[in-house]
Length: 299
Image (cartoon, rainbow, N blue to C red; front, side):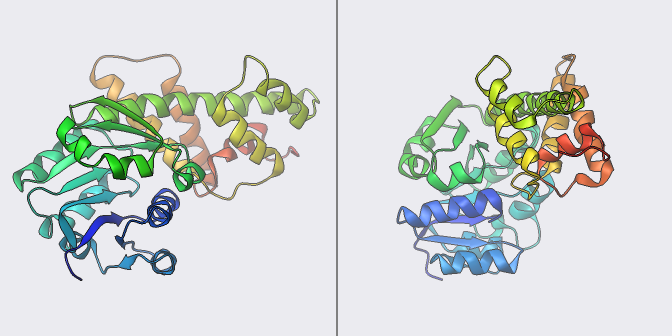
């Protein structure tokens, strides 16, 4: 593959696949890799170049190209970058890695330091909004990194996201912001599931109750989005239970590291762990409603 591809992407799952489709629609030539053959086939059908591993993706990047990492967690991130056939073997000085997973700030900092030894820049860029918003370019990006690097890639970032928040120039602050956001998302989702479970026990119509909440002080975006699906019995995974299980746990740990412990974060994290233990790990996180209403209750 000639070194002419401006964007590489590793991880074409729910979010990464939506980002890839968005980039292709905007005219970017994308080289990609994913461990799932079906995702590679989907990407190829969109006109992306499919590579055998992350190293091959990196080797095909232009001298000022960007490698987007859109995997799930820290272990996958570090394997993509530094593992066997990892991207580091193919990256060159002057290129940029866009780190999109929700991972601990110290993991972001550690990855950035290793990349910097090769002369590769890092943009800390966790994302939020779900696959539909990633697909239409309206997702949020929480950006942290050198201003000059952000400016260099403004066209790419603008196509990826119409809601870009430059948090700071300190790599790791994007991750910190995302953890704060996702902790609140987790708390709100647990609260919404609890409220709808209570509504059911009180004999209320769930859809009507949610109509009221959506126009009243109890409204939250994640509550509306997830509980509508839960009421309909639609638990097909857009965001698995394990994602907010991971993220709330990371947020609580980040708080503990600076001597902070709030009244709700650890409790919300425990609910996601309970959902996992109850066999709901691979379902959409709307399944918290199923957990809290109890298995013997009809929706």
